[in-house]
Amino acid sequence: MRFVHATLPQRIRFASGAAAAGVRAEVERLDARRVMVIAADAERVLADEIVADLPVALRHDEVLMHVPVDVAERARAAAAAHEADVIVSIGGGSTTGLAKAVALTTGLPIVAVPTTYAGSEATDVWGLTENSVKTTGRDPRVLPVAIVYDTSLTLTLPVELSVASGLNALAHCVDSLWAPRADPINAALAVEGVRALNLGLPGVARNPSGLDGRERALYGAYLSAVAFASAGSGLHHKICHVLGGMYNLPHAQTHAVVLPYVLAFNAPNAPDADRRLAEVFGAGNGLAGLQALRATLDAPTALRDYGFAEADLPDAVEAVLKSVPEDNPTKATADNLAVMLHAAWEGSEPA
Ligand code: NAD
Image (cartoon, rainbow, N blue to C red):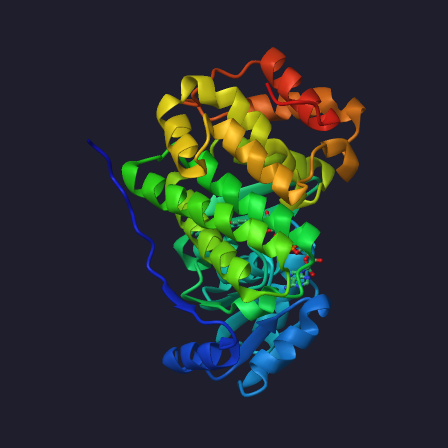
């Protein structure tokens, strides 16, 4: 074995029903006096309770998916105008993403309170979108200093969105197995993430108002993001990144649809990854395990259901081809990518 592995510095609090106390403790730890709260209008009620006892300098609720640059600029200006000294972000990946955009230029620390399984809170990756092009980068300033996981905050996440978001987390795990910085440590985290999600998500679908499945799913989502942050973006993330930025497709659903196609594409040339997935799913191979899970979850199946037009396929293929990681297990060409993306567009059986 020969590898170099970096572990990101971050405090994690995991306790259902304890978000307010956890955030308060983290803000006090930072000795912060002027809190910028970022929470979308949809998460206002959740946020109200969490921030009630904090020294709030401003509330910011302009949150948009994929963080458009002008939205980021307005949030940065608001942080400066109110002399914020910490950001508390409460919401899904879009909300965390906006907090990261502010941290990127201001250096403000973030205390992240996630309400989906997107996992952005555990990565040092930021993303900004301008003129339909999504740019991402890594910067230690955007890694939240602390994450406060409170499973009860996810109880309101509808089953359909929970499933899509959970499969987004599962995609972090799977892609980590062949991403550019894949190593045995992030593979171990990824496999434990798959185990937790494979147990948790069916529990969420069966009993959406129970904490059990959701706790496992949230724990799995965290592991998945740590694995992804460490291993980097593999082919799956590159595809979803292009589709999300160019066509404004919904993030979680896009990941949920594309994952089995990328797994089918790479598995024949990634036997170790496939063996690990087969083992953890308890299936003959990784794809069979993934598809069995997806069937129990009634998972999203086709990109055309989410606003992706067949006419956009050639441009999408061209853009994806430019961003394929060099050491992707299966060599990508315009032809095989076109076949894969067409199948994902129409939702046919991944092969
Ligand atoms: P999102 O944050 O856009 O949320 C999706 C919807 O769910 C929104 O309408 C939101 O209001 C709602 N919602 C969130 N929590 C809820 C709850 N508990 N109950 C009810 N409704 C709730 O979507 P997402 O999938 O969480 O995040 C997607 C974004 O995150 C994308 O922009 C993606 O690029 C980014 N992301 C970044 C990273 C990273 O490492 N930088 C990792 C994963 C995702």
